[in-house]
Length: 394
Ligand code: SAH
Image (tube, rainbow, N blue to C red; front, side):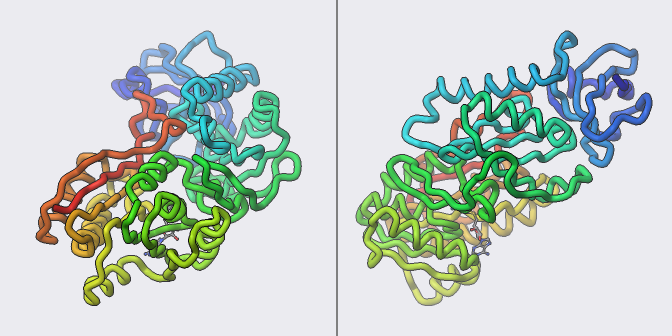
């Protein structure tokens, strides 16, 4: 097995069990390991640190599979990790009341680069790194054996593949998966487009927050910004919202949002969609003096890394300031950030500044995050990306 020797002092993250080795930490590599092949990671004195997947095109040159010197990286290794991830979800009752969930969340489940979501009886997988790609066929076979399912749709079309020197790929990997299917979550049905929906098709990470919005929505006029296929919209209507206006800039997402409202036999006359840019729509509504009792802001990632945090902060402040202005007294703002580069503390500061500049008094009544099928391993804090606040305007 090829050896990767680290520079003096650069073993520290690995000793803290962080699973990444950056190219700058490497002194030299013996031989010329193939992309995705297993290498032995050694400190500057030649001591074993970990065993991981080599990725010659990425700044993250190696990702750790195991810190255990006695553990071999083979099909049995993947079976143990996959089985562990699935069993732990069963034991936390994540599967209660939903037929769709994330089974494997990459580094957080000690399987870097591998995302596996289960939609009813179809697995949707992203192989995002050279290491995950290298073991693709083995992983696919084990997943079917461990779940007893027979279909896999591959959605390895995320931009991050490019950093690994891998082409985008999507399509059937096993069996004959449907392109569109209907999932059931907390009693609500959603049509999910596995072929061209965002991520693997649906924002599974927002499951518990959707349920919370359902509980908050009764008798309220709601504005659902960045609504995608209507996760929050459907729940608000099911919770008895007086009206819901769903805004998104994607016509396809809005069409599916409309379909999802109908699928749940919710009152179509209480629901409107608006195709537009949320930044402009909020300004227009402010100028027209419109107001709402409940506003959800769930924008796309403004800052994938900390480097874009400042620009992202301006974007978050802008939409949240406008939302505070559009809220009636006693109104609720449910606001999210899924930017890895903006942590929960910074996000709360941005929202506080938005309230201040909007001239409103507001309180935080709940802190929200991603659901338990998207766990955060202590050795990989980067796994925590979704944060949200429920705020009340005085
Ligand atoms: N709230 C959704 C997920 C939102 S994803 C859910 O729970 O399922 C972000 C959405 O924002 C996408 O649907 C995307 O089409 C939309 N979007 C991105 N930029 C936008 C903009 N400037 N104005 C309106 N919608 C936008």
